[in-house]
Image (cartoon, rainbow, N blue to C red; front, side, top):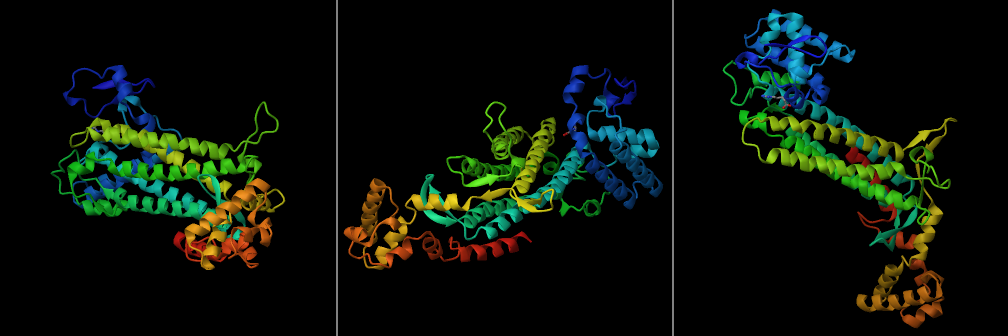
Length: 478
Ligand code: ARG
């Protein structure tokens, strides 16, 4: 049955044989996915070409038919890329739009392309191909962000800042060490994505509608053509489960959670109360009413965007949970959450990688966009009694039990709070009031540099170890 499309074209739905009345107009629009699934046109065309080559390889299509299909598909790809392709809602999705155009272009051979396959295995294959490519792009951006963080860590290995627990000054640390903590989280995110990719890269094509096909297909041939690691082992599973997409969105949620935490710290650090870092104007905006403001929009927006990705994860889990085997139309709902997750992750990584990096200004000078204020951080570390643990450790080395040492230092800190002085600003006589085990050599451990350098073991904050960790982190990036 043919129907008239709003463009004036008459379109032929490929499945109307058993139908006697046309689709309700709203149902047609309601069920159509072409508005959003046209973004996988390249994968759909690649999948169809591989399928046609395989059908010719096993003798189901002639070589002439195969060649005509491939030429037709190439032309369609050109039409789409030049913006000349007319997408039709009546043809529901990207698959039927392309197939219908192919038949219009090449005639009989076009009608043979769908031999031995179904849109069910076709769409599952296309989405996997698409996601595989996108994971690779995401990994590239992630590596760029990590590289910039590692460079920053190297530049600032000797920069001292207060480390926090409970957001209270705890102990002095190297700013570089702090950057490398962020990098560790990203490294795990990259590993999770790489692992997820292995399960994305399994080919559903050949599952056909659900049970496989009666044609003598060669699935290894198609898998090789499309760069899949292997054909899926079960046709029902191949057309139905979207766990690979859920797994990706779950890895993306963790990544966004990490970016949200970094963002939160940057937002605190640029506030005038902390004033630990400066972010280039290019990554901030002003206020339309308060002239003094410079707002950290980029980190705020990234922190906010984690919300939509978590939402997509819950959406996808919910879409999947009630479905009996095998394919159900519910699965068409996998695309928007997946695509939006991909777009969000790529956008956040791109802007974060740019912001954590350096670029050349108009004069050709390299300028870094997140610049620590070394003096401010140093002063903050000095004021917060951040070397109190070092004094306790010092007393332990002099034979005092740790619990007693803790008590002694607590009293010294109380005096510091009353008199607004750091431990290093007290005289030896004053300190000895708290413990006779304290000698002149105590001042060496009360300095920030001494405190940081003393944590000198793998994983510790000593600048020497930070520089070592920078090398290790770079090696893991390769
Ligand atoms: N547009 C559909 C989807 O996104 C393609 C598969 C449709 N299959 C079907 N038998 N209706 O999932």
